[in-house]
Image 1 (cartoon, one colour):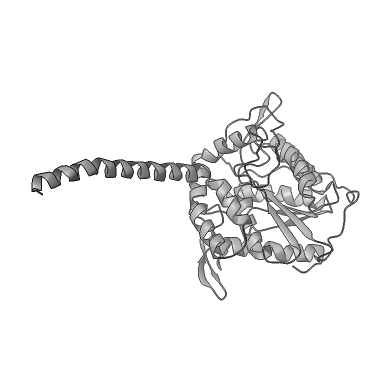
Image 2: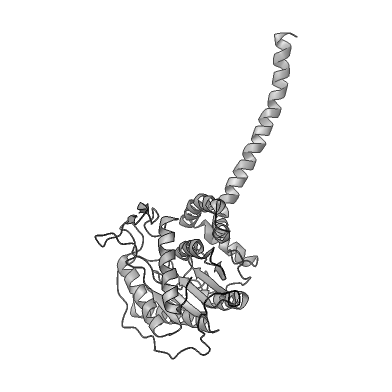
Amino acid sequence: MTLATSRSRSNRRNPRLSSAGQILGICVLCFGIWLFLDARQLYQSALTSPLGARRTVAVAIVHPIARVEEFLGVDRLDNAVNRVTGKTGTPGGSAIAPTVTTPTAPPIAHHGRHPAKSTIPKSSKPPGATRIAQPSPAHVLTVLDIGDSIGEDLGAGLADKLGNVPDVKLINDSVGDTGLANLGYYNWIAELPTQIAKYHPQAVVVMLGGNDGQAFQQGNTVVQFGTPLWHKIYEARVAELMAEATHAGTRAIWVGLPLVGPSADLSNSDIEAQNAVYAAAARANPAVTFVSTQRLFENSAGLYSTYLSIAGQGLVQVRDADEVHIDPPGGTDLIGSYVVKKMEQAWHIKL
């Protein structure tokens, strides 16, 4: 065989190898696009999977991709498509369309204004409010965790702490970019009753509010963030969501927002004001326990820190680079353990 013949045969094979490489490259690209567009749902699926090395690796890989997806707003489109097609965008979610169609105003700058004096009325014990029984084979405790993307972080911590607890069933059903300001995008007040009817939880855990520092539309009026009218309407919405969470005799834990870092797009003064609303509404509803996390992530100097020294672990990263979200596993384990202890204290049970 001559050198020319060998080269000729080699050249005939190269196009096939090149074509196979192109097909492989297209497959990898399509997989990457799918992974990016569906990162939040994959993250939620990872959170609800059994504890172990596979879950730990999946959460570690998908979590940062989900954060980028949220930052770019891609998850909003994904959630909208899921609602149109009859999905909530979260594993096990209920098939409901949004009930509020009025558009909302775009977010505005935070000014650190505090709310006017609370107008939340004090209420009596909700009819049928039940005591949480010690989890057992005869009394399985079902806990429904809802909220925004920070609620997802809490859900990760709760899953780590409760995932192997016998006779406890945790349902993580948070939806990123949601809250109580933009009900046109996602209406928790309308969605929660259907979720409770579907899952029949004895307890609901709520953590949201990071997206609520914005104006919203009430009828034909755009209500500017930080005004007395804004706080009055927001207080009413918080109280209404708590009422929905406890209407069926369910107990609720409302977890407040933690402080954020200096580069965050939220202000700690606004967070303090929102936490005050949550605490006041919880005091007015005996079936709800407010859990403050505002100081949970402080360092020894009483300041925000991305890293904290934790006994037996040394210096651990507890917050994401955006200085808002909670970093797994260090931060999510910290808040998960903290909230579980508050559950035990509030309900007089051992988890």
